[in-house]
Image (cartoon, rainbow, N blue to C red; front, side, top):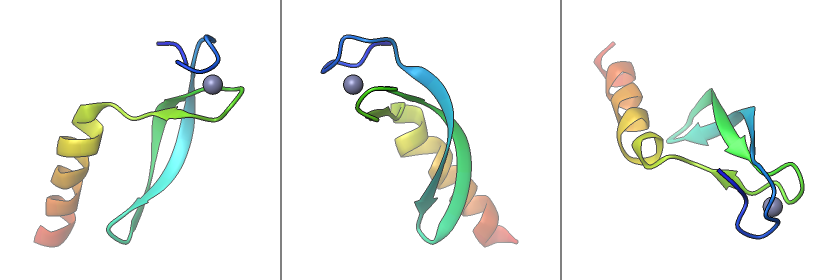
Amino acid sequence: MECAKCNIKMELRKTTFRYLGHEMTHPILRCPVCGQAFIPEELANGKILSVEKVLEDK
Ligand SMILES: [Zn+2]
């Protein structure tokens, strides 16, 4: 996976982000030059929603 802007290899970095009021840390590919993050579709669409559901069930 390369950054489209910089043509440089993206690095896997632990990134903390918020989703619907929850903070979660997940390794995400980011460009070390411009900081552009690549968020896999499965993470953007599915997994986070599953986590959200689990939290709601408790
Ligand atoms: Zn870049």
